[in-house]
Length: 210
Figure 1 (cartoon, helix red, strand yellow):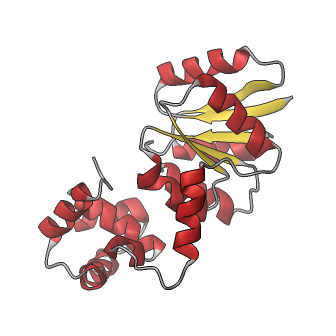
Figure 2 (cartoon, rainbow, N blue to C red):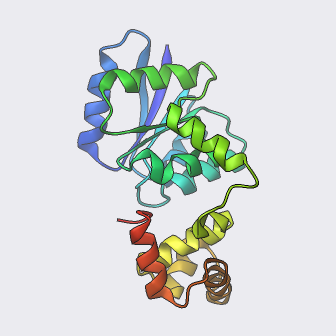
């Protein structure tokens, strides 16, 4: 039996996933979480075989939660289930330690297949993503400006693009306002942009934020 922890802040979606998985003989929902913080708590207190993790959650989004789990040495396979198209987040999530990526528009049988695949120790990724990963490994390939950012710089860039102020970003990431300002200057320099407005415009154009 594959025990699954479902992490999504929408109760209706969690119920839908439970209904889908209840039709299988080898997969069951072992636990649920509605936030990143709750995922970290429940993984410590329980044993599951796969975590199905949403990207957009309060108290620690999917990327932050994924990194926190891996930094703690938790090796449980993690399947990202997201409303975002694969080309927006999949590569970044796989690089951060995810074992698979699936959009919420996928057919129910794809979800079951993905869970079984990552539970078996394999990656669940599309052919298109495999090609993109190979391209990313090519050191001669030209990167987009935001792809040149370090992990923390990318997090700060997204929050700035969403309109968060320096103090708000500092509180969310556990940094000092001065450090956030340093990150901002470094981000603008690396991306060759002049201000926060241009950063927001870029993030919208590249579909990094909604």
